Length: 78
Image (tube, rainbow, N blue to C red; front, top):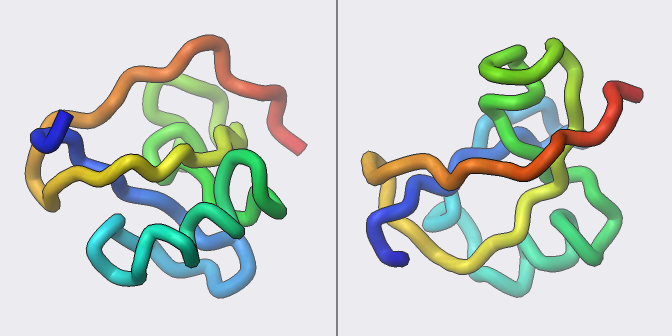
């Protein structure tokens, strides 16, 4: 599991973020199970999903240039 790339989009700041940018507890409050303002960058930008699709991230770790975790059915764009 440590070869996964966790790249997200912080909807509040509009910034691309990586799992190593902040401690996990920060991402857990923003991603899946939190306020869901941290979403998959790839899905939001229309890669394998309609642009604007919001898939809240579940942060478990990863490294910057590893593989990207696949998702189940993405949520409908809001």
